[in-house]
Image 1 (cartoon, rainbow, N blue to C red):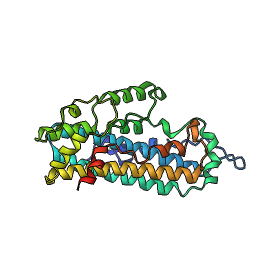
Image 2 (image 1 turned 90 degrees about the horizontal axis):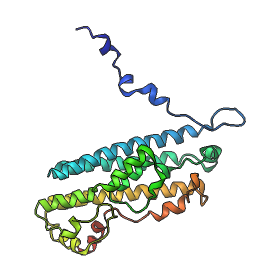
Image 3 (image 1 turned 180 degrees about the horizontal axis):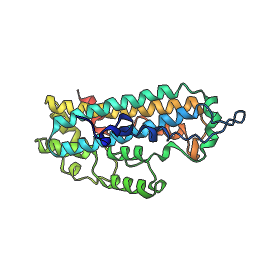
Image 4 (image 1 turned 135 degrees about the horizontal axis):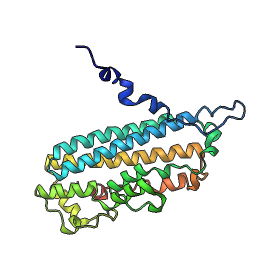
Length: 269
């Protein structure tokens, strides 16, 4: 059968909108000698645009995982958590590429970034919110559609809440105060919950889900650590773009897990 004109026009390039995608790397720097953009700015843009695409996919996956947990589909939720873990490894791996840029090469275009800063990544803030990290952000930083999305995330139950309600429906006696917590608050340790988690850890399925969530938490912390070290080796102790504290602020986010109870129970085994 001869394809129709519409089918003929539907190509790899048109499906993925490749021309539009490749037009999005708009450099702002100017090399004073050549009048062209500084060479390394393209890498900087590509890396961060890819980060935003991966953040979009991680949010897409975590929203689905929450839906699966709410529907009692524990195995499906865990499988998609494993996908998120693979993405987190990819996010960490991208830092290896970014670290091929020397401090001098970054300095060649850094001033052109003006007030633009990674602190302004609304999607990463959404990811923090959906994981229950709701205590490290000034909501006034974001306006318009981004501000609306963040406000909705801040008001919504987290992945942790979905996990707790899911295991409660499976017969785990989760403390009522934990189930009824204000989802707008950051997650804090709960000794009674830890006791329940330990008591039920002999169930392979239950333990497997806990360990996968712990893997996710560890993956996020690994990304934070590598990010801090990359910033330190690139700009040292100088302030970040946009007037941020740079590496000094990023260092304050280290070793602060999203799911503290899953780490606290380690001493019980």
